[in-house]
Length: 382
Image 1 (cartoon, rainbow, N blue to C red):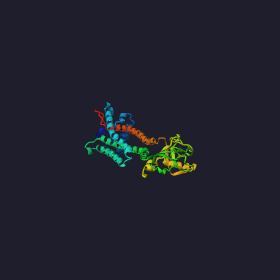
Image 2: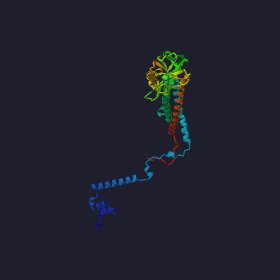
Image 3: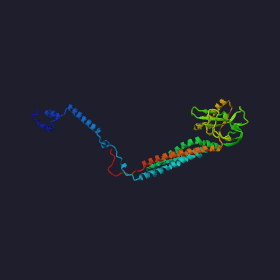
Image 4: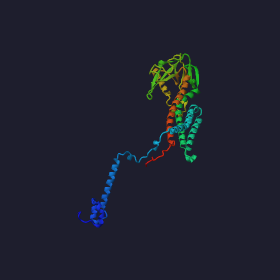
C-alpha cells in the first residue's frame, strides 16, 4: 500500500517506485539480495535489449556506418600528375629487356641451331633459364643484402619468355622447318622416267621427269578421311613406255583438290607443260622413331590409303613403296615455302605474345612502383 511508511533503509528505492522489482525489494527488506529468479529475469531483459540493438544496427541505412570497419584507400585521393604513369612505363621498358633478349635467342636457336646441334641448342636454353633464375635470386635480401622486387619480376618474365619461345619454336620446327632442312640435305634428279624404279632415288627431294611424262587424271581418286573429313587426292604419273598393267612408282598428290573419281586439279596439274615435283617426305625419314608423335599431323599415310583405294577402283598395280610428289612447275619455291611459312607464323605469334606481355608487365610495374603517400587524416579504419 502507498500509505505505509517506507523502511529507513529503503529511501534509495523511492526514485524507482515505478519499477515492480524495486517495489518488491523495498517492501521486503529482508530480501535485499536478488534471488535466482530475479537474476534470470534481468539476464533475459539484457538479452532482449541486446537483440533489439543489433536489429536496429542491421536496419540502419546510413552508408558511412555500414562501411565504418573498412579501410579507406587514400591513394585515389592523390591528384594524378602523370609522373607515376611515366615511371611505370619506364619500368615496363626495363622489365621487357630480359624477354626481348631471351625470346629471340631461343626462337633463332630453333631456326638455325637445333637442326645442326641439339647439344648447342640445349646449352642455349639452359643458359637463358639460369640467367632468369639468377636475376630472381638476387632480388632477395639474404642474397644481395637488399630487397629488389624488380629483379624478381625481371627474372620471372625472362624465364617465361624462354619457355614460351621453346613451345612456339617447337611447333614451328616440326610443322615446317624440319621438312625444309631435310630437303636441303637431299638431292634433285633430272630426266627421270616415270617407268624407272623409285628405289634408285632414295634421297630425291625434287624430280624433273622426262618430256613424255604426264598425269593420268582419268585414274585419279579422292580418299576422304572419316577422322579429319579432308579429301586426299592421288593420280598416277606415267609415260609413253608404260602399259596399263605396269607398276606405278610415282604418284601426284594433293589435299582437297579433286573429286571422288577421275578428277585431279592439284598443284600445277592443269598446266600440261609441268613435269616436275617436290617429293613428299615420310615421317620416318625426317624424325627418329621416338619423335614420330611430333609429326603425326603429316598426311603421308592418308595418301597411302588413297593409293590402295585407287588400286581397288581401277585395278592398278602400285609399287610396293611408291613415291609421292607435289606436282609443281617450281619445286624450289615450294620447298622454300616451308621456311617462309614458318617465319610468317613466327612473326605473328611473336607480335601477339609481346603485345600481351607488355600489358602484363605494365600492370606489374604499376604494382611494384613506390607511390607517393598522402599526408593527412585519412587512414585505415581497422
